[in-house]
Amino acid sequence: MNEYQKIYDAIIEGDEDKALEEAKTLLAQGVPPIDIINQGLITAMEEIGRLYKEEEIFIPEMMMAAQAVTEVINTLKPHMPAGSGSRGAIVIGTVEGDIHDIGKNLVALLLYSNGYTVHDLGNNVAPDEFVAAAQEYNADIVALSALLTTTMENMDHTIEAFTEAGLRDKVKIIIGGAPVTGEYAEEIGADGYSDDAQGAVELAGRLLEESK
Image (cartoon, rainbow, N blue to C red; front, side, top):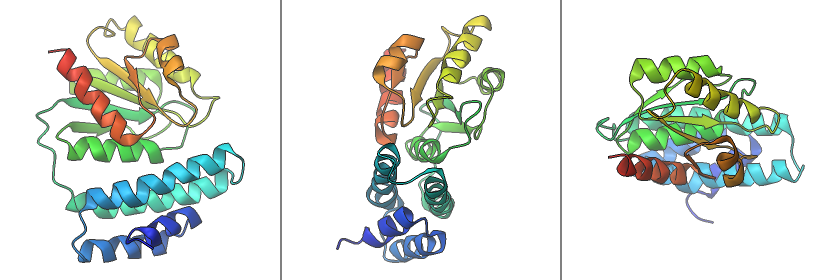
């Protein structure tokens, strides 16, 4: 059993207290927070996603796992190297109608630790809220997340809102989430798609480099 197995198991079981205890133990042992995220949280949530897709677990179990991860992230964040913000400003949120934010939270944390200024709008974010935030924070990138197939269409509606506001050519829009695909990203005119948190960070870097 590797050193991340206990926190992995705690997330799978949706055991918030145990997950927090294991996170604190790993920190005390000098394990870098980014390793806890990559080897413990992300791998666990990938498995949760697989189990959900195959209907071996359902929304309540997923929400318990998500809550455990959220609490661990809140514990790890003060130990993460603060981003300088020099790499760009990113607005991120889960689209309207969708209250799931575990994947979004992981992406936001990794973006923050990689030097971006991150403005997390939370979940159930309406298209006009994304537009207003992008204007307020002079965002370089807007990242949209969705977990449900029924809320994916609000990614399209959000992109349309940016077009109507005359901002579409001024900001890059990337999307992600369990039901989202590269094909869907192309269909709705998004600038990119990633199926995992680290990939989203790399995508953001590529898009900003290309826009220079």
